[in-house]
Image 1 (tube, rainbow, N blue to C red):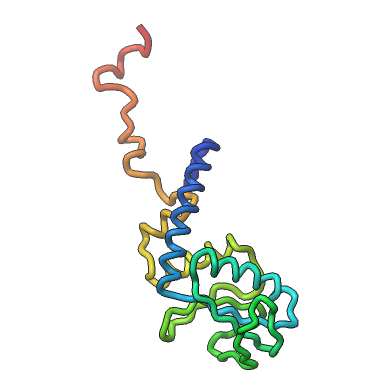
Image 2: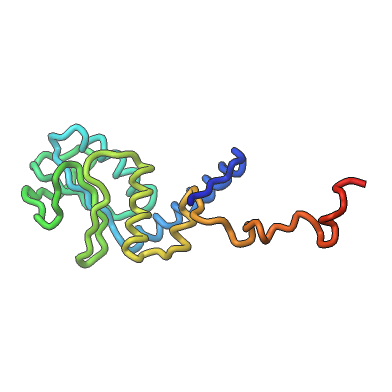
Length: 172
């Protein structure tokens, strides 16, 4: 069961903590893996996603490799490679397509199609956990919900009354 703080103030604190943990993980991942962005210059969604990918790369220091598959370059990426036939092993069904690549040959799909910066950062954290680049504790810190209550918050560990006072009235 997932748990989220009920209080708006506590929920905001939890959100901020998860956001900061996510930023730490993204910078850690950027030190061991880069982004590979396959696009078609004739694709409008690719142009929109290019801005998001560029921001992701700059914000977290990801090395970015951009590849046009139709020979048309997106102005933001004038140094893109041209690769008309991407490797079949990537199973690109739609553009744009974004991958994480850990040299020398580990390449993992992040997303095909266009999406938000927030969705991309969450997906990168998920992939980092799945790949074993971060541990469960690091991963859990990026979540806005807790899967289980802390042991210290279990009902049997919360002592509302001192022993011996259970039969006394709550007032005097």
